[in-house]
Length: 177
Image (cartoon, rainbow, N blue to C red; front, side, top):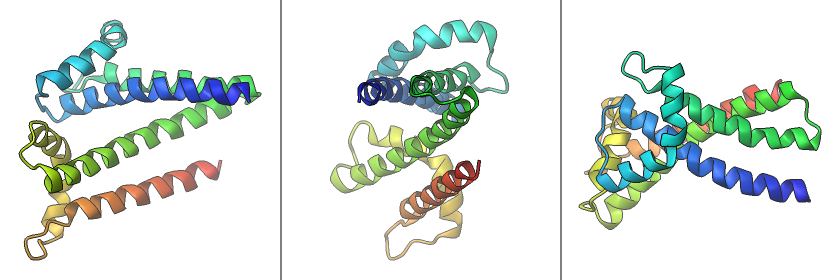
């Protein structure tokens, strides 16, 4: 019971920090300039980890590898709570890899849902262009294949379904271990 409570608290904190690190990586990877409020939140939350990691892992190929590695380290630390439950180290490492990939998929799903909400509620919201820009690399290839139906863009729905399929395949791949 106590381990479950500890895991819940650690997972909540890790998800917030890991999400900020993954967002930081994605913004830099696709070269999207965030609104000042998002940038301030993301950088203030993650600079304490990214700056020291950049000394060890510099950006290569235009990617902020320190943010991505930092996100994995956060997942690994959060998953290490399972060591208290008696899990062996290799299983914790495998579970951390699975959770890291799940976080990436959930992050993309969340961005797609946020874009859908903006398109229905307020397409001219200040954050809407930013979220659209974050989703564009995912949606562009789908839009080439999936035509508009009426004036309805179904690429968001197709992307969500494809991400859910990837999530199911990830679960199958890791359950076969």
